Length: 135
Image (cartoon, rainbow, N blue to C red; front, side, top):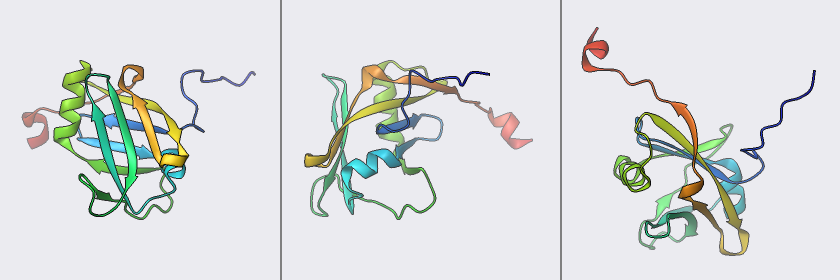
């Protein structure tokens, strides 16, 4: 049996996953490694160029978020429904899909950049109606 090779995703490169249903951005460990596991980070967004970035920053910088302790997990999960809605709407992504985006790391600037046009459809989200949730 030959081993199947995934030519679309390289797990050794930085990445994020985005899910509209949960309002969650999962920052992959490889992304945090390039950034040097900063105490604080921020999101940068240029919708005109369809660029998204995560950058190390200080506590007093605009948009600073504290990085929680990462132990045995492969991602750092950040909840931001408003940001996720903006990304989905601006990129015209399908509301029923979650997405994964591979990034380009700039260790000297402790930044990882993501081209939103390169997003890969990951999973179709199972949506429940109120009636199903109340049963």
